[in-house]
Image (cartoon, rainbow, N blue to C red; front, top):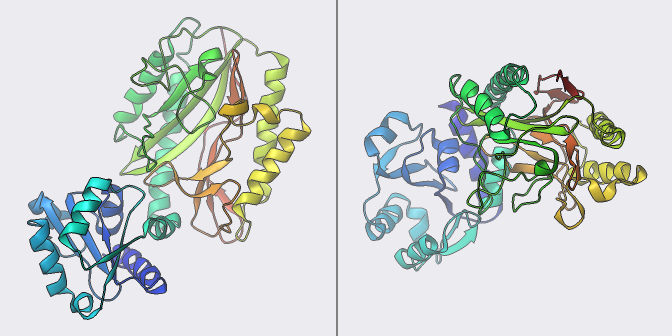
Length: 395
């Protein structure tokens, strides 16, 4: 119960700071984070007082799981009346101000809330929720560490089966089978609109460098235009980079890592680009400590890539480059903070960040590395445990 109370108190503090009377949580992951349950409904968090989880389905299961009081949702019209009855502070306000998650709430649902509560001024509180979730507790970090150990075991188990001619999705299927048997939930949640992610991406040579809509430095052909990313049917060949960018979702919490393999030997310039990715990672690690500003880490990485005359290949290629070095991870793969220009958050203890310097070469492949880290009081702890370096597979 205590972790959920602390989370609610941190959110309530933000509500009071911004003059909001309360917040309506609607998204599955936010509901889970603040209540411990993920049933259909709304959690109302007042600026002062006790929150209530209003559930449509399944009320019975929410009662079993939730760390906060649960009530039936009923109709939206009756819900609005009950909300004002339960929280006199709303009725006392001339025009109560309520926040919700504008970043993920569908417009149609937002319109229904506006119609049900015409006296309310609605504002966007999504960034407050994301900022509360940005700093992880020791219990959350412990689960992410366990996910890291599982993905390392899966990686090592799969590497021994890599062979010339096997298809990308065969290798991905081996990894997925391994981690599913060890508790992987089978999905990697993302908050961003229209961004979807399976377990990760295993892709080789030109397929890995094929651009796509996904907001990452590597695309992948995918199995069809219906899912134009990640592993495809292309056979893996000798002397080309194989990017294994994978994660594991354990009890809702994610780990994210990337490693580069090759059957045989990669061309010299691709090996050099890989070594630069490790150099960028090492330079970034030196700055991973409380107080470092997120955008400074990105700008340092871009400068190192430019010094090596590989800037146009860094984190994608030319117009398809993504403009970040790393991202927060937790219950979603795209959490705050982001290591990118304009993100002025100073690092603080408890932040968990995936850092992924990669280089994309159209028609040839993607090379790079990705580790996940937790910021500590004195620096950082590397959560990823898989071996580094170019991993050479015997032909």
